[in-house]
Amino acid sequence: MRDETRCVSRVEVSLKGFDTLAVPVFRASTIRYADAQSFATRFERGPDDYVYGLYGTPTHRYLEQKITQMEAGTRTVLTPSGQAAITCAMLCVLGTGDRVLIPDSAYGPVRDFADRELSKLGIAVIYYDPCDMAALTRELETPTRLVWVETPGSVTMEVQDVPAIVAIARACGALVGCDNTWASPLNFKPLVHGVDIVVEALSKHFSGHSDVLMGSITVCDEKLGLELKSFIGRMGINASPDDCALVMRGIETMAVRLKHASANGIKIAQWLTEQPAVARVLHPALPGDPGHHIWQRDFSGAAGVFSFELDSCSSANVLAALDALELISIGASWGGTKSLLAPVSVKALRSARPWTGTEFLLRLSVGMEAFDDLSDDLARFFAALKLRAVTGAVSAA
Ligand SMILES: *Cc1c(COP(=O)(O)O)cnc(C)c1O
Figure 1 (tube, rainbow, N blue to C red):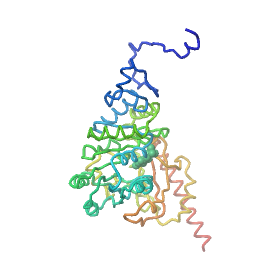
Figure 2 (cartoon, protein in one colour; figure 1 turned 60 degrees about the vertical axis):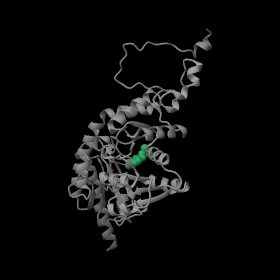
Figure 3 (cartoon, helix red, strand yellow; figure 1 turned 60 degrees about the horizontal axis):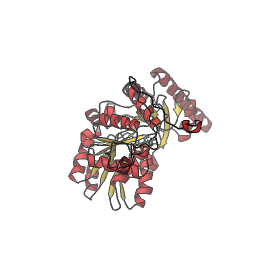
Figure 4 (cartoon, protein in one colour; figure 1 turned 180 degrees about the vertical axis):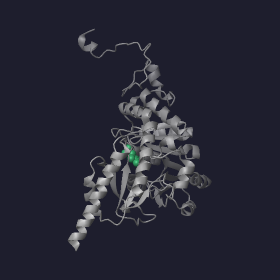
């Protein structure tokens, strides 16, 4: 064998005795077939067998199975982002002439996707008040293919009554899909409550370190699972095996991270209720929250993500006072180790029930830091806010 050939020839290495605790990363575009006959019949291989890198490697299978177990489903497909998990789930089950109901509180980019892409396909998109069961029941009098739920809702944190929604949707022949990113399967298992499709943004709690984008779709119905699998293959959608391994690593500490973030999140939420500048704290684990009883009934815990609203401060003062934060970063996304705060303008994202609150809600994602350091940092923000209000009043006088 010449050197140039040797450079590309295979070396056989024994794996005997190498039983690693870590998930191996298998990178592959193509795979080698034992003979021409097996290549000719490759599409007769089962859905979990290997055909081409696009349809998954053993690394993908590890993560798919892990998530399937956590969600108590039968099949999971992986997507390159949480947003892709939502759009693929919707595109797979919806067709021209169908109707979809989406909660007003859904993750913002879902509304953009539905308004622009689903409408283009001749799919009727209706937004509903996430907590108004009577209105939802009326909407379901018109034949509907899919009811989307997200609980609690993005930024405004409304808790939806999933078992009740499933009961009406079933009676009307509609499928129910759930974005479960906030709770994760550790705190809520939508499939156990009769939901047909559950989606997770793995970019959040699962990966947990703000350095991976990935999503998952899990179902119980095997026929639907196979349709999803062939749909995402046909669309050419795949997640990187390296990213799968990072998510696998994240899952191993997810329960511990979530406990810490949740406990500190609740402490910060309570601390915020005592701050004079705070009008409301939107967190379903607080006893006064409108969604508290449903959260308590259906969920086994909380995430460290919630929002709060300030008392009649000018938006300009709020944005400027946020510069006083030294520890908490300003940014979107959540579920990582470092705390993040995002001033979110809600008005443009609500249509079923117009937003009547202040222009910005402050959405906080509590990370792994200590409570005292976070409350000290937020105290710097409130001090800056107070100073601006006072100096504003002086200059107005
Ligand atoms: C972040 C998020 C998504 C989207 O996930 P990406 O991986 O960032 O695309 C979807 N749903 C919810 C509730 C989210 O918070």
